[in-house]
Amino acid sequence: MPGGIVMAVILIVLFPVAVIMGCCAIAWLLGTLLTGDAEQRYEGSELIDLNA
Image 1 (cartoon, one colour):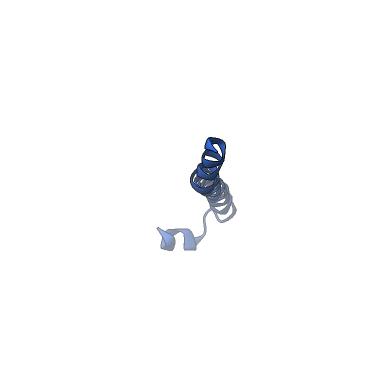
Image 2 (cartoon, rainbow, N blue to C red; image 1 turned 90 degrees about the vertical axis):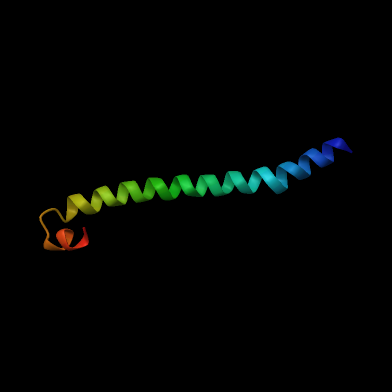
């Protein structure tokens, strides 16, 4: 019985937190990579100055 309670706590509390933190890490990585790519691609563009 205690094993079932431990598994329930892991599935209800820890697993969703791990999924959310993993998605945050993926979003951070994509944001960093794509921002750097956009800055290189549009270097010298007048739109960069308007965005700041």
